[in-house]
Length: 204
Image 1 (cartoon, rainbow, N blue to C red):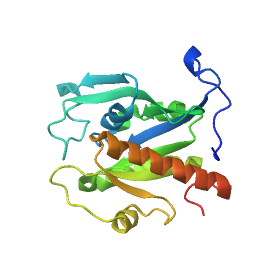
Image 2 (cartoon, one colour):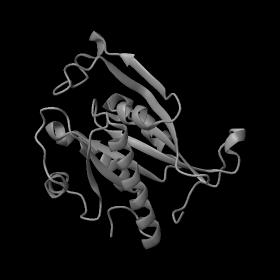
Image 3 (cartoon, one colour):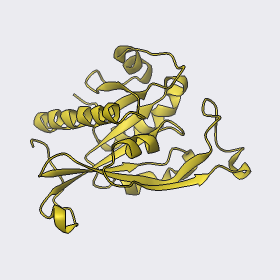
């Protein structure tokens, strides 16, 4: 494939010699990061979810996600094999501000990212976008189309988020495996474009 991958081979014997591509799945609290990783992973995903408690009631903003009962406190991890040469490793980041100290460590070695967005809480995406733009990590925006949420076209989302016209925007339903896989395909296509152009995300 035309994009740069990690120099490290995957550790398991059956995947010896395969290149590992580390990708992040980021976004605001309750936007669907764990669901996306779970939908596409070919292995049982590692999930570090804990039940929401009254202790975090004054800290966690549940507006729009009042039915959410758990939260990721460290990371979600999944794997999907693209072909005999490339395997994607997916790392879902915690969405709450109080766990953002994890992001710096999780981003080490990442080639790209998906920023999941919820149009009902679009401002929750700004932190993720700023994080990846400031580090030159290529990303795409995937709008998770929640039931009952108003649907906007890609240009409207791009304008609301104030991102470059070159950053792809993908509408999706991360509960659906095929839809979630299309998000990853779009990201990989973008990474190949960025690698070919030799520029950082959001600057060309």
